[in-house]
Amino acid sequence: MSWRFPLFGSNSQQQQPDPNFQDNPTQPWYPQSVVGSSSHPSMPSSSNVGPHQRASDNSQSSSRAQPSPAEAAGIIARLKDKSVDELQRLLKDKEAYNAFFNSLDQVKTQNNLRDELRKETVQLARENLEKEQRILELRNQCTIIRTTELAAAQDRLAELERQKDEIMRSYSPAALLDKLQKSMAKLDEESEELHQKFLEKDIDLPTFVQKYKKLRAAYHKQALLHLAGKTSLR
Image (cartoon, rainbow, N blue to C red; front, side, top):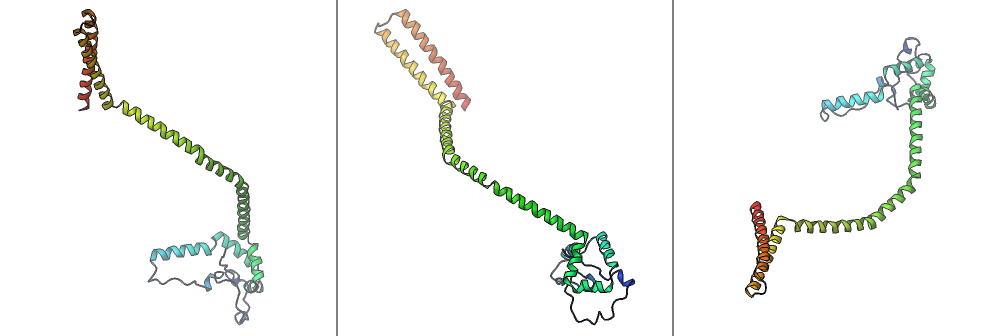
């Protein structure tokens, strides 16, 4: 988390800077993003980057580097009461700068949030590790079901599907017409046998008439059904 602190913004009107400060050859340790007015990060060439991309990059860089106006005002209020020597120490002493930086309310809030997220992540990781044994057991059960019970169920399903296909084929229109055709042929054959017995005087006339009439009525009934079925399939 890096912000550009306006370290000399409002304090320059109240306190005069040390005249020897500019002659100090010691380079400040702080990152260049701390003082926005004295550092400009290198930008890609305008010939290689489009205007929309440059606007997006500038917006993202500004939102990451600079605090909100309210946060900046709070930081400036903390810096206004410091002397020039204290401000110079913040620029030169890394420990002093870190102490001041970590004392800001915004930084404390971010650190607390980070710690809370870290604790929650660790807790979730522990809970996941505790469930690992149960997950392994369920995985083994799934493997057993897949290799044994599932295979048996698939075989049973295949057998039922085969039986269903046979039943559907036996009751298809073509199969029903074929059955009618065979039944008609059998009735016709029985009628001829009965007629032959009558000719050979194996049965009397009343018995012959009764049985023959019954056979021929059944034959013609099935013949009409067969004809109607063939006509509906055309």
